[in-house]
Image: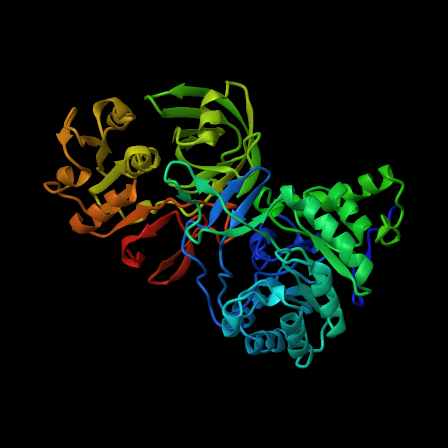
Length: 303
Length: 243
């Protein structure tokens, strides 16, 4: 009998598989087709202070072994998430959930995190710093060590739960960003968010998505994610949740060998709604195949 | 929604670019005409959402147009091929609102879902009138199938090579109807919106990520808040649509 348990900042997960924010809604859509309590946990739809429709459509473009999305953080706003979405989730999910938060100013991050921190079902806060900062010419928080430090400090000062910073790969040096998060008091790192990409339609000769650019995800980006997790693992002591293109149980093992304590599954859920469940079901077989008895033994094993 | 494997029973060309595919497998998750299936094809990352033309127990028909690489591959698939599909997707047409004499308007590749709806309405004892709009005579499909159901059918062609010359709205003007249902391209929808004298339902198309409500890729704004074309739609009621 293999042991798939891992621990993220003091909370034990039955397995390291976590559906990623934006690919799993608020969970209850998936609860209609399987028992989502089989998951380690999941990260719910990116939540902001105010309701957002997001970007104009079309918002989706297909790629080889992946896809581009420019949804633009559509969500009902933190009040409605707390009043409507979390009670629906509580009916089908008895585990702690990861609350994914976005903001367009330091104050918005702090406001939304403070509200969600008070919810019993929230186990961790996952703070997405890929959004543009409206007070700084729209430059993403996640591209500057100073800006991410400010976000971490602001969020930590108003919350009690572990704070994971979800990093953008669209930076010159992700290691310095991760270290800045750790120095400022973050409890963990989630990485990587999507890679900025574009597709152009040959018939219209224009970009496929209305927003022109979008986030590229899917199995094609796994090597980029593995490389970045490997680099960050060498530089920080806080746990890393690895993500980017994970589609199989083998990918989970690879990401953990690179240094991830847990993993997130994103685009794969959209192609196959059972993807996360299937990965969990297949993990024991793959662990046995590679002689792994206890998953925690392999974290960072490739170093 | 369920995930299932269908077996291709038939994959037949109807016009230059339109094909009819008959699939055998579990159809128990379908609840209304106008729903769709999302097909996994080898070599493509995203599934292909295709509206259901007709279904019965363990048998389903789709009629699709070749518009890109995915549908090109579909057109080549042989009888006996297995297809992984998510089925029973979307919120289809509500036939209860039709009144006695509903009008069904299909434009181009928007025609197929009107067939299953027409069949259901006739089963309920309604007297549907159908308008099928095409560009030209060579593009016409399913006309005889609608006639075989017993519906009153008008065909329009933009170039006048068959039926009424002009657009679906040219055929619509002189008709008496209690309600309308439509599926087709956006310019046709806008023309219908300016012409229709009753309430009705529109079936929309949008680029989708997942097709089952998870990714928010295909959202639209309505008078009653944001909706997902794949999950809350594809059918929306006239009164809620923001044009």
